[in-house]
Length: 422
Image (cartoon, helix red, strand yellow):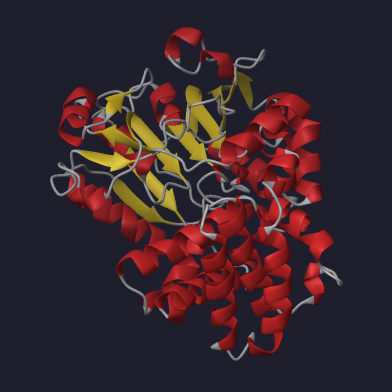
């Protein structure tokens, strides 16, 4: 019976994510079926949901020939169970009999899916006879067509294929050390990357040595680059705009800089306060809209990690490709451009501004910076290879960074530009 319950929980997670457009993390908090599970059943439900989201487009494409009607025409519960059954058969190497029978059993005990049990059984039995259908489909088919087209237009066909293939694997964990990365690596069993992050393949974060003592925090290796490239030092006045949840604020504070962290989200700022307390670092925290807030005195350095589509983090949050809408993504550049203009009012002439977004789309990165330069607010302060060990291949001809993941790298896709205020 527990096998059927884990399948139902996985399906409920998919429904909460895809039909209610929530992140998987939010769905796991809200799902009663998932939270009723314990131990390995709970873990397996999460694995099924996560793996399905990672290859959703290919799963749907492979299921389509097995159906007498479009997948979207089936009920949400049956649709979710079909996907859960398919991922077990085609990727998780679950024994075919268990994958089919337990998933069908989940439908029988679920009022939302009970009427479709026979249909589910017939389709999954046919699916069990197929040999690795997901591998026969293009990697970019994991995404909606419009998103794959956006990536290909901006990145090219080869880079898009590589980016898609990167999403198919679970990401590693990266840590940023408050002081010594070598000491953190020894304590946690990780390895120090060329860029100075500590990499672990997997871990229970709060159980790792040094967590309670605040010796490190979780931060993607690419996400650690913007603060490094600001070159802040002891006594520097630094503004961190859109700062929460605070990884970059912690980096800047660890240099001894006088950091002002600004964000409009009070709940997210609370997480920043908790992280500052845990690490013993200090920063001034201000809850304000960066479009309207201005410092009493201009800073010498500013970091703007602008709100964005977050499409560079799909390896960690693959549901993002499906719960975001194209029209929503198209609204980001207006706000991003406005924030970069506001940042110019906060920095002294000759001061340094880092603009970054965790997306590879040109409209949210390169185009925003190009417009601000054309308007005479900034000039480009080019990044050099010597400053980015391990990321040299990510340097653009203009002197910006686009951290498209290389094989085995595991980091997110960030666009980063360094500017000088005119």
